[in-house]
Length: 470
Image (cartoon, rainbow, N blue to C red):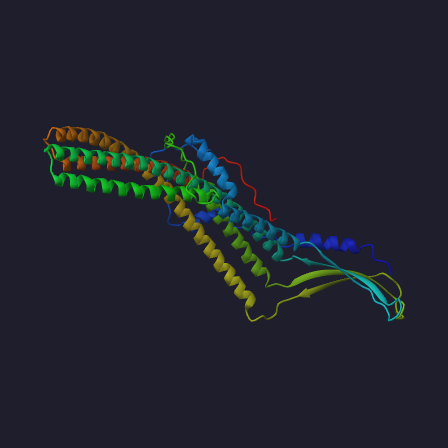
């Protein structure tokens, strides 16, 4: 018999019926989620730490440091960093799960072919069977699964964006730390040279009868201490360079070239409004999408408690030289449907609903944790920037005073009105103040990077596409 002309139409109508099934409940909007997840958090109209403009958060923070070497290194890290490649692979994986979920809403078609023969000759049973089936998503189980996959994919994409921002921030702070280590080495080398000069002066005074052996011994101790401090700083510099090389995927040989001086601190960064933070930071957006995905999985689990309705269609054509077929009309077509209703499965399906509901609660709590952390990171970065600015001014004055004090005591030592110990103490105070000032200047740059990362501002380098499998 011939295939019914309406067979294809029935499948199309069934697909339309499935798509027009029960409407899905949407996940809670962001405002409701914030109110539910952060009931004890009153968001102020301005940042409490203050000290910055309330203008909208600006991108291109990496370029604001005016360091082409730093920008090039961040670009290299975005291509070769292994951790970022892992995050990129997760983006591809999540996109694949979306395709799987999309495919569950479409008809499934399969074909079976068979051929046979007799011993010593040709002939036998030959046939082909074509089967198609479509589950009518009346209750939304498949569509909830599709929505959950899409939300999860959006969450993973936001994770990838935050991973890029975090990597850029880590490279920038590592860059500043490596430069600082080099400058600290120069200060330590100055200290060694000054200690050696004092040792020579003590020896000269002993030789002409104006000094004593105790002063020479103390000078030698001072030289040894300065050399030991220099060696420690050199090791710290090598480790800082190796850390940078690992971030960009190079072999850690401590040979990467960094700038000779720290970048000047850019003007104050606009920080926007606290209420806008949760809408901008990629990690918060990822947490919000995971809440939506968990909500959809609850709907999927609840829909699994209801019957599943499917339509099937098939056609076959069979011929044989050995067997006399009772019906030789070929091809043969069939249409049908089935209903599967879960009657008793030991409470497994209801337990799945409970599990998915608990996962939703966990996702909401995780959103609250990340949101509170985001507020804290911005406030801490602003407070640190204010404190470091004041500390830099204090330490700069301390360095000037220490230089003057050392200059005066050196004059007194040469004329014999002060001993070597006073010179060494003033010398140590000066180099300690110089290192402290350098540390604060580096920390100001690092805290500015932390502020940009906390605010969710972009660094304006092109996105790196996920690496395809070879």
